[in-house]
View 1: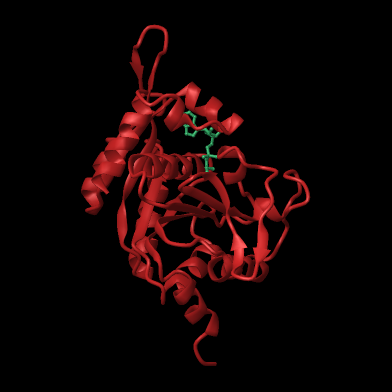
View 2 (view 1 turned 30 degrees about the horizontal axis):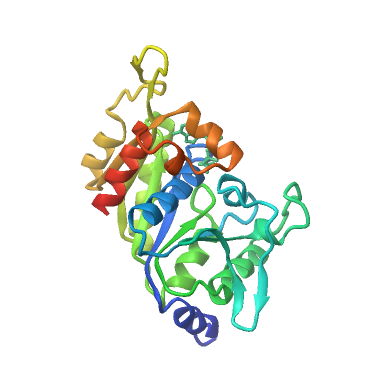
Length: 268
Ligand code: ADP
């Protein structure tokens, strides 16, 4: 078989998207979707002239519409493709969550159907000009990841950001993620350590909820030659904002997590 004609369509569709960044995590629950949404908000807020898009490629567990406070919105397919949902003036989102009759509906699809949906998202969403497209993927290294990477091959992808917690079990999987990236030729832009520390809102004491017995993400990055982009603390207000879809970056601009995000965005 010759090359997939969709690759050329995707290349054309994403020709005006400068940086395409894939967000990965070894395990579920480490905060990959949360970090994706926070990075989206932070990039959009700190670069008001930039346009930021988020593609929720977690077909079976789309959480971006809820985290970004836009669940229940509709997407429209016009002559130029699907219009994403605008979270703010310069932050847009596309997710399978917008195509379901109810947010509680389960998507129970086998690989080829999920891959078809990802291909459709990459070839048919009319993002307009974007400075950053963040692609939120399911945990681990699955068929969907290979599809995203394959479909983006002609369009060019900047690289991957890997999200982890300092826990040993999570870090073990980060090694695998980084190996995966190396095998498929995907540059690793860096690692974000989430839930690094807990700062008590009452007494300001700092506790390590997930003790990093071998030095956490910093030591792992040093061993693997990867960049530690930054560390976000565990913050109950952040969790609350994600549950309610509120914009944490705007609401608590001076919180330690937002300061860490600013440093990450400034450094990338
Ligand atoms: P993943 O996408 O890796 O499965 P989520 O982003 O859905 O993980 O996060 C899992 C849960 O942890 C969510 O309820 C989220 O609100 C919460 N969470 C993530 N990061 C933080 C943090 N830094 N502080 C507090 N809660 C967090």
